[in-house]
Length: 277
Image (cartoon, rainbow, N blue to C red; front, top):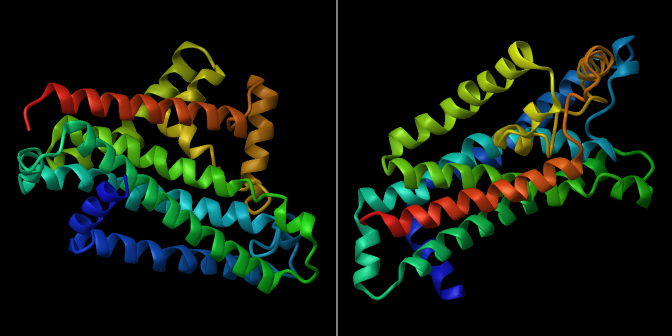
């Protein structure tokens, strides 16, 4: 297992787009969080500050930092999920791996292992940043407050795996990096959203629209209402008018995402075995 992980890492670590994406991730997460913190500082002492919580104190720091990571996971880790496969076809290294003795099962396992390792790495980064900002800005450190939203660590890892698994599948499907990335973003930002709201407005307002793949993954770490009260108001309005919540519950989004990860990985493995390398 470690041998497969090492082989995959050796192929990936010197690839410039991968380095750029990871550097972008490392820089963007604290930078965007600082921006959120500055927004709160600007309204501090005004009427708006009563409704908006400081994003850098426990326990809300877990949710706000997680929401920043939500977007970064979608953009950067999704593209990396595509790169893991598209590069193999671009440089014809998949066939070379089979010639040198690797089975298709081992090739697939190496990809899944590197995705798990990368998800773990960015989750550790998210955890360290959340703890650092929280301890530095929280006036009174209470263990219960520190750990109140710490379950977001596991949700963050799962979300990262979810985005990468879907992107991973699109790469096996299209093989081309350009086509895969276009489909990944187009599906997420237009097709899935369009289908969901077409069902809501033209058929029936049902919670089933929340269980679409990318929405379920997004709802693992949703926008924190305590930092952006407008979404709390929107959620209350939706519950009042349509009798449904704006987001899935953590348990619903967790189970849904695990199922979708298994589906996307299963379809990826099936595609790998059915098509020529």
